[in-house]
Length: 156
Image (cartoon, rainbow, N blue to C red; front, side, top):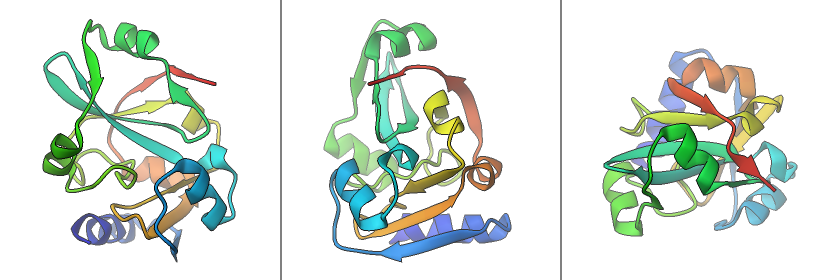
């Protein structure tokens, strides 16, 4: 619950309004949207990727998927892969499915945000826990994160 507590403290420190929800464990974007009672589009899906020699955190709409060719082009790299579950745990303290859409200082990775997130008025995400969700205004979330860059790499 370290990441969960850090996120709530961070949101509170920034005066952000949010709704916290406890639910059954969810491992997919579809399951998360169902238990939240929210459209899948507002889900912030966080992907930890190794781009060449550095790890990054990419947030895209849960209803979309990242186009690896577009992402490689946007990052100017030839090699791109998902972090392994062991790397994910070491880097974020999270298991697959609950990495939050927060880079530094919560998750020690640069944060890239896809344009698919910016068109929504809300964002919903698992805050380091498969049994918790946070739903908040996207503008409030954006005030609370340090975005390294905005990319347009989602498809589907």
